[in-house]
Image 1 (tube, one colour):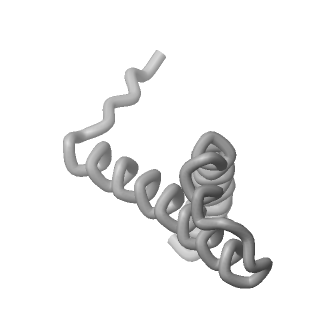
Image 2 (cartoon, helix red, strand yellow):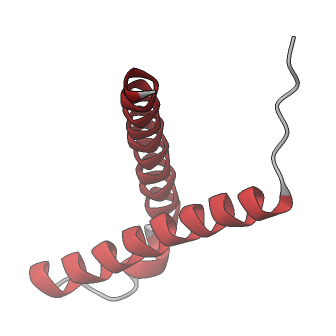
Amino acid sequence: MKDILFTAKQQKREIAWLCACIAASFILNAISIIVYRTEWKELWTQSVWVIFIGAGLYALSVFIRLIACGVIRLFRKRTD
């Protein structure tokens, strides 16, 4: 079997994606607090759910990037 190795650059890029997804979920939480006019303590009391939603966004982004990579490789092989 072929070993799969992640370079340091790839690891940093994936960590940046994960941090961006968690930050986006925190921003969405803050927006929902403003829209629904709830207390700001929910920003911290709902942090577990925010992290789960961030992880879900990350998983969705990985899925979309894998599909996009597969489509690009499929078309690249047909043109060669």
